[in-house]
Length: 171
Image (cartoon, rainbow, N blue to C red; front, side, top):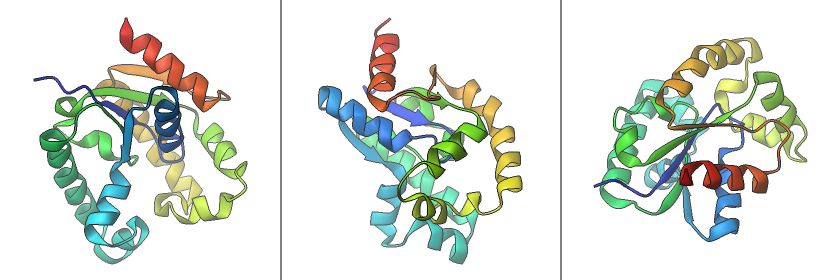
């Protein structure tokens, strides 16, 4: 049975959570964030999981989260962590929408926020910008490969992105 979920993927800081909330505002779709689910279940911040247990452990938690989404969630917008696209069961969860943006535009978006420092501190993989850009470049084609839909989000309002997603998914 096909799930009626929308899964938002893309690099960290691209605005997946913001777009999910815009979709909620547009049509009342329930929305969840995979990182929030993991933090709630482990009672630990993502940053602390990376620091204390490592990325491999975190990816295992994402796999558990993906299994739970398949079994338990429908009619929901799901914003994901930047590496969640690697989950083998991704297509079983719902329609995959890649929020596409350049690395520089993502940094501009984060740095334009009033709480930019807090947003940067929350993302352990963005601490070294050179390494982060390498990671970004290594993921772009992978995001495109798994996506059912690609939406460029550069310099667009979240409400407009949400409308574009609905318009394209209806076709």
